[in-house]
Image 1: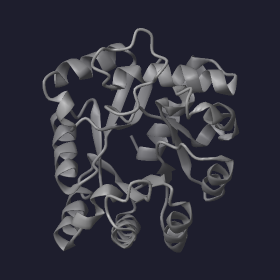
Image 2 (image 1 turned 135 degrees about the horizontal axis):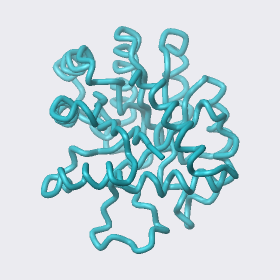
Image 3 (image 1 turned 180 degrees about the vertical axis):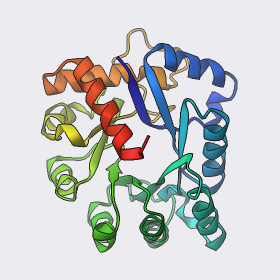
Image 4 (image 1 turned 90 degrees about the vertical axis):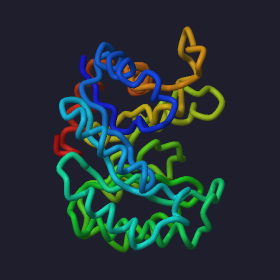
Length: 261
């Protein structure tokens, strides 16, 4: 059984002490490839560097997360366009809107999102999207360019049924994380995940965040890492009434199609 982690924040400082061991554990757990998320100007540079250093195992995205939208300027836009000219960088993002904490003002988030959507139109690469508590504004921006962009994934989907079908109606892929394993807030996903068409389903860890809460034993450091993607796969498979092997096969195929791997 082989897997592809479509979103892991391997540039996070928590991975610096044992980065090579993290990759080795992922390989041992059946992870075939990892797409390293770029979520800021510096983070996108670092993700690109990791992909170039590990071409047999890592790819990257380049983008600015809405939390960092206040820092988006012309230099950032130029950097993202430069990085996306490299074949190691497979998608535009992580980009989108997040009104849950509003680390950047809504107006700044929308501007940064719209500018990154324009990059996707220009470069023709897929979109790696983030949305939390901003569904209406998110769709408004996406709809303005949806007919001019190709593949798009709403990563780390945690929303309700109406949001899911809004994304599916727009031919978006859906990324599922260990949130589905959270008995406090993720149980609704166990029903919804069965509604995701097989050809639109992707899985990810979002490491080091979203450690599956039902892991036994739980790691003492509480850090998520790509080796736990098999646990996410098993949870998704159980919710869909399918075997882990079948879900691994279809999500791996989908990830290769989505990113052009």
